[in-house]
Image (cartoon, rainbow, N blue to C red):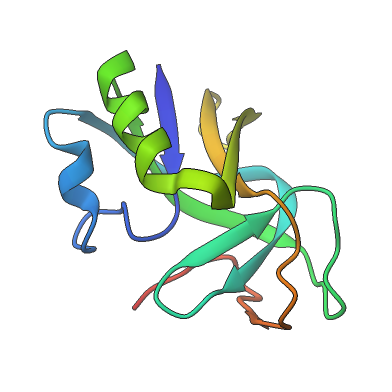
Length: 118
């Protein structure tokens, strides 16, 4: 199964180690536009809801082929903040992505180009 990562799970970022043993497939972006928020040390993507400053964009990230065991690790890591859903990507594949469960109470800065880097 494929996972699309856009934050601290990307190559070179601090939590990429959680994908150890997973096969890198490609770098791509979403077909649909979403709102990406900078939550400080990590980003979050809103699926349908809009924040008060919403400006949807394509989300840029990386795709990995993962095992069910790795998915369990990622679910545990993402915790209560996120839910996962399958989406279509520009690369012509479908992958799971983690969306924020709800709009945070604080107005966080948006990432208007959909490409989070720290």
